[in-house]
Amino acid sequence: MNLGFESNRPELLHTLEDVIRIFIPDVKFTGSDTCAKLRITVDSHEKIVVLARVIDKDCLKLEIKEEFHQDEEPNNQVRRLARLAVYQLLLKKTGGKGSPWGILTGTRPTKIVHRWLDKGRTFQEVERGLVKRYALAEEKARLLVQVARVQRPFLLHISSPKPVSIYIGIPFCPTRCAYCSFAGEPIGRAGTLVPAYLSALRDEIASVRQILEEFNLQVQAVYLGGGTPTCLSETDFDKLLTFIRESFPWDEVREFTVEAGRPDTLGKTKFQLMKESGVTRVSINPQSMHQETLDLIGRKHSVEEIIEKYYQAIEMKFDINMDLILGLPGETPGHVESTMEKMAKLKPDNLTVHTLAVKRNSIINRERSAFRLANSKDAEEMLEISRKKAQEMGMYPYYLYRQKNILGQLENTGYCFPGKECHYNINIMEERQTIIGLGVGAGSKFVNSQGELEDAVYNPKDISYYLKQLNLLTKKKIDKLVSIV
Ligand code: SF4
Image 1 (cartoon, rainbow, N blue to C red):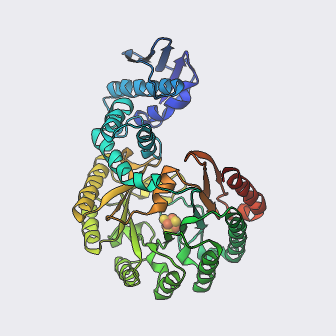
Image 2: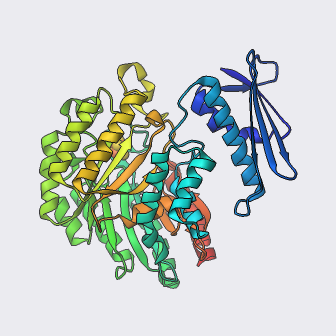
Image 3: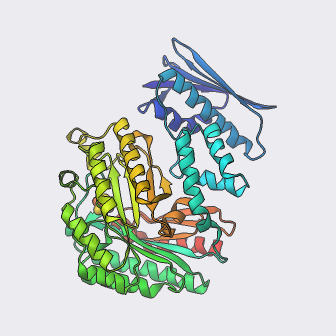
């Protein structure tokens, strides 16, 4: 749909686009000669008054007024009020449901909760503020506060100088899953890229190790992700784990996670190698406990194999995370119910429940007609089933994030049993700790001594480009790191 935009603050369009897309996903902003126009008028002299109008045959309008808040930067307040006015206007205009997340469209909604708590607001005030200022559904506001309450001790009791965490990415998988847009290579086709990549990665790790030593920086958590690091051969996997183990000051490391997403890449030897290298936490990801779904999404393993590898990991006394995806092709709420019942029997320490996000480069997106996806109503029901079941199991939500194009405008939630929170997951989401990302596609976040995110640097997603740019990238990362310690 084409929509014209007029405003005495035209720069606001940029901040309004994602709110408009909640109601009109395919909106295109064109000149003022279109038949429907959105007009926003802002007056911010004594107080802020935003008048939003849709100009078409009905000419609906809506006005919001607010005094200036002490605790909100005036430009931010204007932007938020404009978003709120447009949200409420389009709710009326379209008769739609909007989003349970209101105008909080970012990927890390808990960040605002922590900001408000830092300023001395109570949990109740935060909850009310989210509903009033951001139009969140009450249950989402409650959920955010519940998550933030769990996270607070992990964010505040960090000593000085603050320890960092390390992410290391392995861009290879056995095959490509239909929902995934990950830029890595199927390992069977990667050939000489594998040794070239592992060698470059070791160089990058070694450069960062030097800086950690020089500035006496401790490492709190190490996360070996990807991709599927466990798809490396046993020899390569062993060499990599040993190199990681020898590279970081290990005294303070509280957790070392390996993303072992595909059970078909696991076996007793790999578990043994992980144990010997100090790995504490392993992620084994079923996504669904239905064989027909696994076949449809291109996971080349069976449900039985998930269970078998899970018990092997239990025997080796790893903490275990399992990832699930709600809304996979062909699945109904009934499928989710039975997957959750199987989770209740297995009782992994962590359960990460994703809602399917249709990613641009995924097979599901490219071949839309071949896959039947859940509608919003079913996705909501699935989410509710997973939430109830996790609660019945004795788990609670401890981190949460959202993604673009996620079914039903919902969210991804990490649950855990008491004392089993993953430090890395909390810190990567809340951006309160420096995380050094190494390898293809890895992001580094640099947090200053006040606990504020100062800068982020991303390694390229393409392996060949990463290999070519390695020296430059490493230097940039090290310069940033040195600037904040
Ligand atoms: S979902 Fe995981 S295992 Fe599947 S292709 Fe993506 S990164 Fe690889």
